[in-house]
Image (cartoon, rainbow, N blue to C red; front, side, top):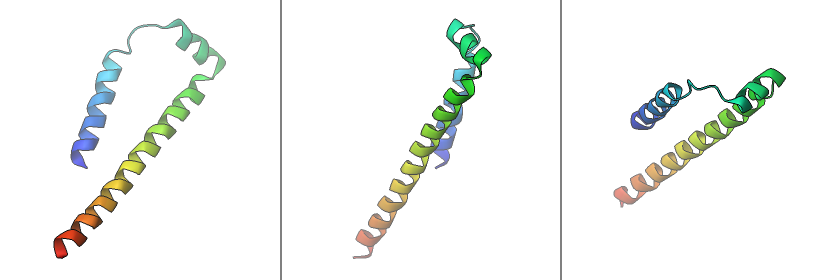
Length: 70
């Protein structure tokens, strides 16, 4: 779990380093207020993927425990 969080943090930090350039499309989205919709959708998708991975990890851990008890 700690490795996953560290990897996500590293990706976010490295992404911020490259986000210094001005992009015309981003300016248009920002001026019309649609950038918040894009960011919201991306955050929702990322949160869904993280929750899905955590659920799968728990299920696999339970199965491993059951196998080891036999």
